[in-house]
Length: 114
Length: 113
Image 1 (tube, each protein chain N blue to C red):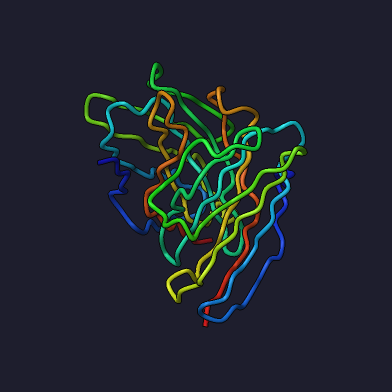
Image 2 (image 1 turned 90 degrees about the vertical axis):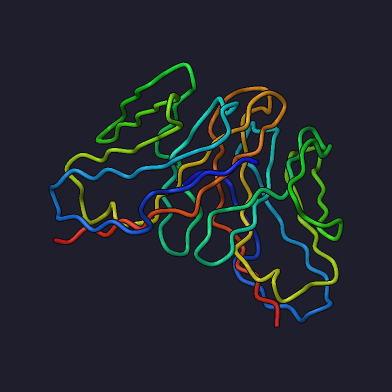
């Protein structure tokens, strides 16, 4: 176990709806990243949060947004869901963004958009 | 642009054999590389990492080799066990202020008893 927990584990939403996914980072880790993993693909970077601010973003539209809280837990929000948003959403935490250390992943949230 | 690819999408080995999983990367500015193992229904699990100033690093039953000249990374697993069956991803970090990890598509390793 990595100490990174995500909720919920599975979720089914209808196209056009909004969804919020949650992540608790490993104790002491102040940097959280979110990734989208489509079936049969590697994870794709969505964005990263460091001390409650976004400090890096991948090629995802603005309807993908996030938050990081003072305890370093994080949320991923997706508005106006599309069928292609169906994927495994992974949260990863790192000790500090300035350190070249490994990212520890949670088990992911499987989102299905119908 | 940045990309990380794998030479083989699947690899099947006999239990006890050594496994080698290869990865090519294109971003010469990448300064940090990680191998992850992902079992079905789980998130990626850290295996081993290597910094760009190294060419080899060993862990327990695993060795990572980095060849910066040809932008190639490999993961060697000694005495492969059925529990090693999973998808293996290499990931690179772009360097500087770019902290994101770029993953390849993965290699499915199947260990036959």
